[in-house]
Image 1 (tube, rainbow, N blue to C red):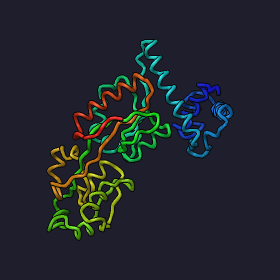
Image 2 (cartoon, helix red, strand yellow):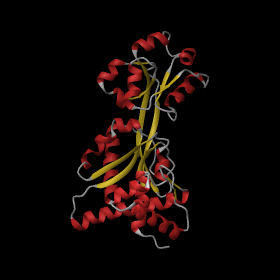
Image 3 (cartoon, helix red, strand yellow):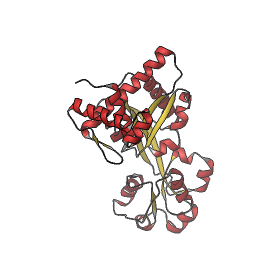
Image 4 (cartoon, one colour):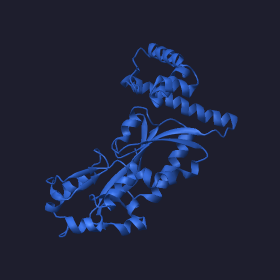
Length: 298
């Protein structure tokens, strides 16, 4: 099987932009040229790689080829920088959960601001592994200890969360504390429908019997604002609560209660100097920001 680099680049561009027209603009060729390259790539592999919808959808076979395309582009960029002593920035696609993105992750990567262009994909920490598996990203922060095939996994530490609400909300809904009955009535704020943090604490406190009214606020700033304005209670991380203005503005429903979410850095095994540098600064940033976790690298 002889796979052409230009054809692989066309596949990657089509997936990234969502359309063949977008891929053509990115690669400075015509849409017809993109279509011809993709057709030739599918003939070479003997598989359908893309579903020509809007946006295009990569097939199961296409994911394997997409991973190859991204790996070749990453290694090529590293080699060009080395041979030409180039200062060109390398693009790095990384999946990261919203709370890490809003707190420690970007400061950790600040030392690489003159070396790497970030293409960040925000997803729940339980969903980021899927983006790594299908070739969308080369590295991801995940909540799963199981290593994605073709990757390495290193524990980062623990994000610790505590149930919090505005003082007025706590006084109104929890005059006797967060009892099971009160938790069954008091509105709760979820980030999105994949957010299990609040449900996890509710299950523990009420043995799974509570089904309170639920807000969904898929914005980090909006999520915190919903808590501050008394729309509901939610789990806030210690990193968020370290901000003095936020800590003073909320009441912890039970200061002794926490939910710990272990995080892992999973990355492709490709021997890329750029990916190694990103890995080094992410691990260093996590050591500074996160709680220690008793888990092992794999």
